[in-house]
Amino acid sequence: MAKIPVTVLTGFLGAGKTTLLNRVLSENHGRRFAVIVNEFGEIGIDNDLVVDADEEIFTMNNGCVCCTVRGDLIRILSGLLKRRDFDGILLETTGLADPSPIIQTFFMDDDVREATALDSVVTVVDALHFPAQVERSREAVEQVVYADLVVLNKADLVDEKTLADMETRIRRLNPQVEVLRTTRCDLPLDKLLGRDSFDLNRLLFLAPGFMAGEDSHTHDDAVRSVSLTLPGPVDAACFQNFLGSYLAERGENVYRCKGIVEAAGQAQRLVFQGVHMLLEMSWGVPWKDGEERTSRAVFIGRDLDREELSAGLRACLAAGAKA
Image (cartoon, rainbow, N blue to C red; front, side, top):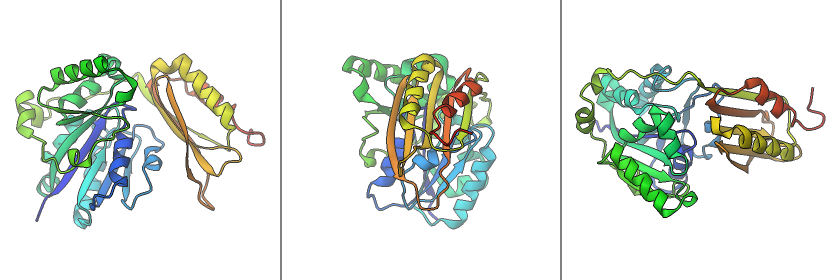
């Protein structure tokens, strides 16, 4: 029986992994995928940011697949392998994931190893924020080291010299990796899918103890997620002003923020995504008839103050929603 190809999409917080996943699911390539999405916070946001495709989305929240929810990954994979009603598996990791334990999963679990083939480890790199990320995060470095394709994303936000410097830095970490420059992950899908480029021997050469699990992984305890829900619709202008001011003041410590919010008087979801001081807000798909309009927000960063964030967001509730 043919093995099912698996593509791992990784990259630091806010680099563009979900954008890349949406590109795969939106284009007409004739293949059907099972999609597994892992998030760091206890409230899932990414699942709702994935395009409304036919694919079934499996989510793993409140933990990182490289650490606490690895057993969940094996259980999801085991269930999928009994069905086999798809052509491949796309696994999007959290932005804080070390790829090595995830890769090990596809070789150390007998059933998973027999039924799947790790096709590629693709790392999305934020061209604007990568230098700072590799300085403070071991995960940002390892995501590049274990990749066979680096998508150097947000190329439109930096100049040619900066891009060239980024490529040099990436190749110092991983001399054999292919690097593609993109804006909003606009790469041809034949560069991403069916690569058959994952090479376990290369990793064993780099780290002889790789398969023995000698490279134990821990996260920086100062980095945490704050997940919040709001009891009613917000005033969109107030909400945008608060986020803009908050990120301008505290953005250095905010690695990622994202949310889906009900805006007063609007039929569409208000979607926000931020990386450090950059904030992007847009109107998403309309709320469905009868759907519970729950406003959710997740902030991931260093030394975040839950009470400050909660008070700031609640101050933006529309008139009549403030209890």
